[in-house]
Image 1 (cartoon, helix red, strand yellow):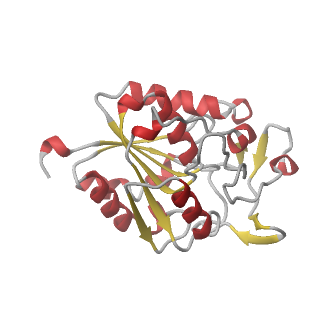
Image 2 (cartoon, rainbow, N blue to C red):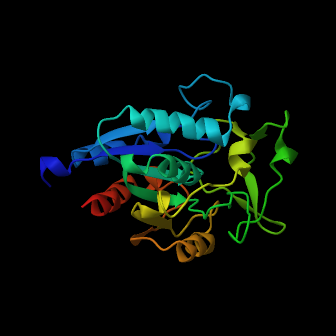
Length: 240
């Protein structure tokens, strides 16, 4: 790879998570010579704003602002809920985004949300049933995937680093157009052992929104933790 091919890769974490989720992946990507920018969403990680004040808009605003401050165009990647964020950001500033990478993430059509709207195949969750303030959803160890059957979220830790998530972010509809977001090459990393976002639902999203390429990892919902070297190799293939 030549110096001109080195990229700035912006990484967006999912719900109930922080930028530290990318800690094991980052060194592998840096070995390829890339600049890695792993962001904490507002109310997460090192960001000290109140989670109850956050919405999908505040998340997208923060990511857009961070990207606009970077020189040149970037590669934008998201895990889980981060997929809805990177879609919305790319819609706003398509001129800044070279490629989109969905890492077992929600890759949704315009008008869909990660809470199961308009044929996404996802069973809606009543997040307010787990809410103490009507604004935030507390993390629970199980999540409804198919009807009344409960599945344990497949992450290599007992509890996530953030215990509360914005209900607005979990339920807001993605707003994208073919003119903006649709013109950016998109890639999907499918995780075959994912329980939080099962492979059939990942595949349904891929079928609905065909990608330039689809890659598979035998991993759960956090390949950046479970299979960082393999994920880095895939990201490098996408960049090449």
